[in-house]
Image (cartoon, rainbow, N blue to C red; front, side, top):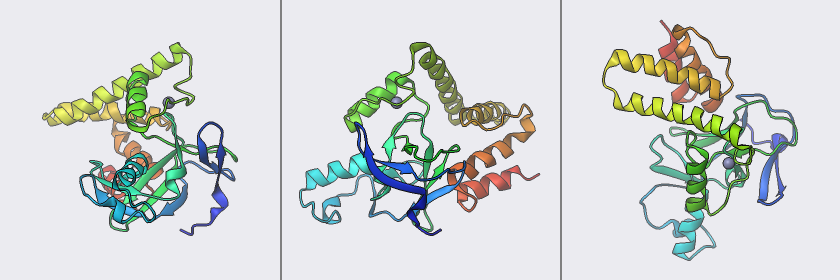
Length: 239
Ligand SMILES: [Zn+2]
């Protein structure tokens, strides 16, 4: 895709320094822009200061990298520093998603829901399914800020409901990873997929047989049609 700046701009975000904003309506699943990483490295590699031009201090360079790098593989061991994407601020209810295509070496930002003109774009810097207290602790420890997103500033009853919802998702995901019984895992995956689809505001279907279609729909939004994750989900959805 071209890198036309028509869909976004960078400007002051009150209380947060700079931020990225939509310049027009963006549809759910739409690719907003792509970018190659300035630096791509495995987490424990040394010497990022050699690549960050103008920042000869190794400690400062490491700090810049840690605060801004995005995960580029599923285990987050491969991390990339992106110049434009690093301008996207955090929210615990993000409206855009970052994905990285390993073979093409390109990161993409996609809309997680319909976005109105002049909305600030947000990705999540922390664990998606954690409770408010855990997210707050993680954001303060790793990024030294207190989150004031719409969820973190919601009233306690709203926050408690969302915490319970996220805890349930986290529990289901831990069961999927821990369980080695195919039949039991299958029912847990069904439940998790339906819960995740609800979390992403996809149309929830009650039919378990639709689960692969739900996974494919979620992958289309997050990764786009040609990403290996989406191709794998499409294959799985075919009889
Ligand atoms: Zn928050």
